[in-house]
Image (cartoon, rainbow, N blue to C red; front, top):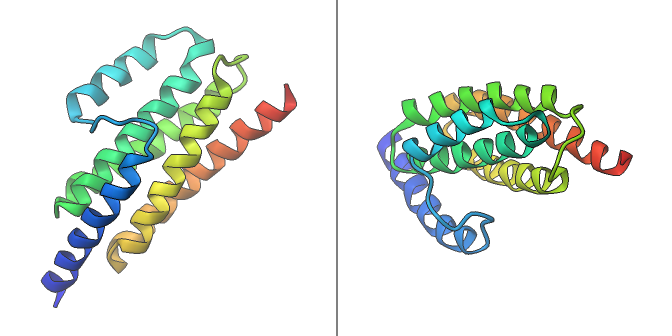
Length: 152
């Protein structure tokens, strides 16, 4: 029974990924190397640029997590979700640094929250708590970024 559900999820993600991907802010499919390179760049960036780079990192990690979850690689997807939570905390800490491209970061976080919501609806019962926690962290970072945009 669980195998049938996983196959249905893979098919559903495959169909949804094609239509969502066409409207995705980032047209290329992220891989582990590009994520690691972006993570290194974000940690060494000027404080004004970190928020946007962390938002890009969260976005790419989410896309890769969705892709891995759809392929049945649940452990790798869950590992990425845990890392997304940590990076979302970094976004929170970097918001007060007079950010450059803050509106772009907020838009990316909004799209990332949308993708995580899709993942939440398609996930197994056992995996939903982690996806929900990650979605909450991303929503919180997105709301804080939006408040900073309106504050300026």
